[in-house]
Image 1 (cartoon, rainbow, N blue to C red):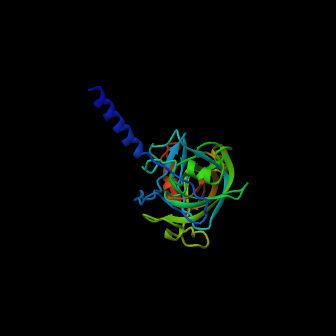
Image 2: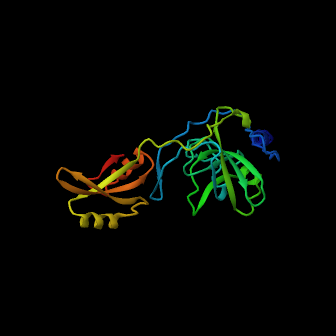
Image 3: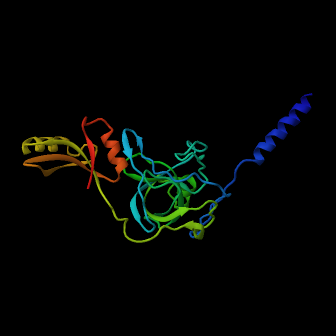
Length: 257
């Protein structure tokens, strides 16, 4: 019986080892490969809050570039869920970004050594200091920054990934050109005064609340002048609505220009 037990245990151990994932790193720079075809979760533009700060995913176009610090995350997160519901695999070429739409394809260039990694955004972060992207372990190895932990990088938007893409030519490229035209802007009115002194006091008190600017609008209402205080700087109606619904100002409402 002991021999049978030992034999069964050995077989189970061998089976477990045979299913363990292996990985390799290519030195090529032009091909974006995945281990198998997958159906990725759709991109989401839903705002979210981390550590009390509200983040709003933004529309981007191919060719846009951003600069900042990159970091990486690996073993402590491997196998856990990412923000879009996928399982994080540190051997895949993925990354976390605070506001880029999910499945955005980004070229990451290490500004110190010129090495390049092409990654797909499938998570949110990093929420530390001024870092702008959190790379998978595989991507960090690609640009040789595992040892240093962080690196100064350039991010270039390439496009959005189609299901089952295996190389750059399979990536859906976003139309190049000038930034999208803003049809209208949104503000939140937090007060209205018949005397300019009251408007100035309110404007100065609440300027830069949650990072938004306050302004005074001098408007007429029949034979009277009204001085309205607006909070400005919202990128969308949803962002303005979230601010209005925060409860900071009891009688606030959205205005559109």
